[in-house]
Picture 1: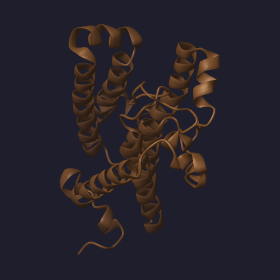
Picture 2: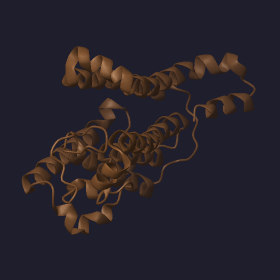
Picture 3: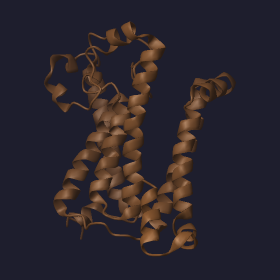
Picture 4: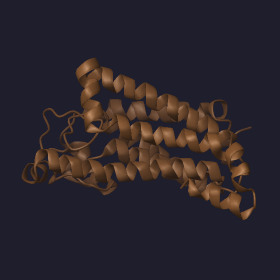
Length: 256
């Protein structure tokens, strides 16, 4: 999606001399954000780092680098040229908030649980007959990022945000495809199908009504993780004007 600013510059006869100062930092931040994730999650790089700093050390390093590059990308998106593609309507903001909360919720439910089929999970004690949250999707964190990205695209009609959040959603989706391929190769086709038979590749909220969804995790787990998701969502929603400079509540007409 980085080609869009190039097209706009060409259309306005700005040329590269206009592209570099206006969009250079934005494109560099986004490139390094995605390149950093790709490099760190490569099996060789991950194994090399894990042998030296341990499993928890690797994920701590990954989290710090991701947070720093993410913050830089957001900063550059906020300071990139303002190119308005559409003016978000109230209904778009409402749908966006629903999608974003769904993303936060599914990611909170799926982070660091027994899940040998995706990223951000543990390989231990997974019962394929009681998949729990994996009945909704076996990639809860990545689908959470996808929902978060799509929701933000819908609520932001300016080009830098459409590029940034759209790229996040695309990156998460292709990450899901790649992880399925890698896990199937790593586990072997027969074992992978045995583990994945009652899970879903897509985000399937209708699985909430299936009996298998209610198995796999305790009631206290659901309450705790849902409470964490609600707290994170409300915290960011209330502080959004301070952190980002944009108020979703004001877009809804609810802020004074």
